[in-house]
Each structure stands twice: as C-alpha cells, then as structure tokens.
Amino acid sequence: MKYYGVAPVELSVLNIYDNSVWEAKIVPYGLWIIGGDGRLDLLTAERRYLITGVPPTAGSGWRISEPGARGHVNPLNQSSWLAALQ
Image 1 (cartoon, rainbow, N blue to C red):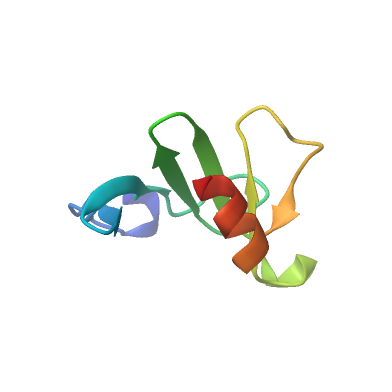
Image 2 (cartoon, rainbow, N blue to C red):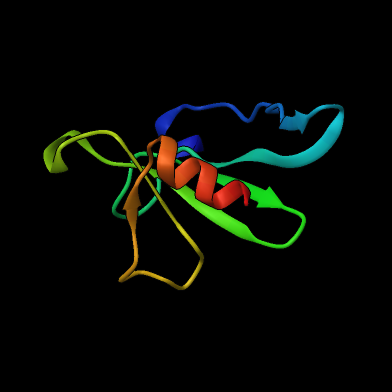
C-alpha cells in the first residue's frame, strides 16, 4: 500500500443482528486483490464467505463464494446473501 501512497487505516466491522441475536459480521479484507476490486469476508457462526468486487473489465458488481470454491462463485444478490446467512 505504501507504493501507492495509501496510508493504513483502522476499518470498522459490520455486525449483523436479527432480533438482537448476532448472525454474522462483515470484515474488510483487502483493497486490491488478484482478480478483483477488493474483498470483504462474511463470517457466520459456522462458515466464512468471500465477497469480492468484480473489476469493470469483467462487468462490475460483487460475487460471493466459500474459500477454496473457485469454481462455485455466485453473483451477490438477495438470494445468495440469504443463502449465506442460513
């Protein structure tokens, strides 16, 4: 990050609750990653998901997958979001 003049900053974590019960959290992971424009980790009590930004050269948007499931990447939408929180 120093090479690009980006100073380190403390980033907030987003905790997700349903009726006052903790369900998950979103943790910023990286600004620049290979094959994507940033990454967030979605952590539930049982699983971890990777939410990656799709670069403009590949159509833009967001996608979600489980770590190690490179062949099983879904667009991030309401359906895939709710499935991850199950």
